[in-house]
Length: 237
Image (cartoon, rainbow, N blue to C red; front, side, top):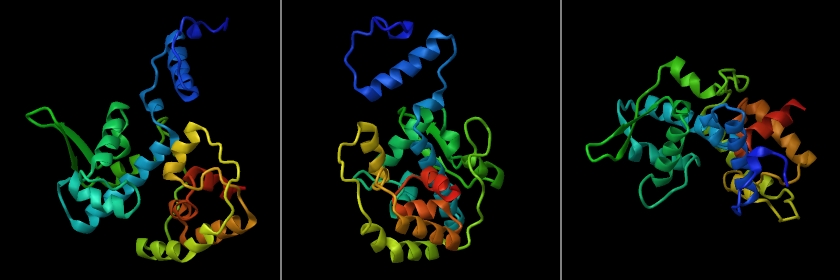
């Protein structure tokens, strides 16, 4: 029998990822500490929220809208590749916002305010955040800086052109031959199609060159189709 008290008397068949999540929650309960709500979010979801926050801030600045709603924001985020398109004019966006709210981490998108309609339905409003509040999306749940700030050298249009120019090279890079991905890896690859693919000298050179041009980690990650924090670590090495 497993000696860990929080694993006794489970009696339920779960996937490895579910077991890992349940064990973490059970462990926090066993030692008498509340389970941190933000741990219900993956690192990738936190990074996604930060990118969405920056895009919403840019949208509100460029359009001058005072109280934008989900349909207003949705199309812009789809064009940026931050949210999947759907037939319901923002279903995936609303689901993501709801997940942040339940995790107590809606503050990652300080432009977003939640309210309930008279019928009890969720309503999402988007307001231009002050400079200080907008910076909240770059703060970890611990309150420390999540990453070094890089002042972008190129406009968003110039970055889009750069990504389009270099994209064919990325598509020609080798892919992982062992296709046996875990469920967690497959989930990550939905947002980052080249996550866990092998790195090559060609890709590393391209990464460094594009970062030197753009000074924008998110732009490099978008081009490489990899996780931003992985790109950041590679740039350090």
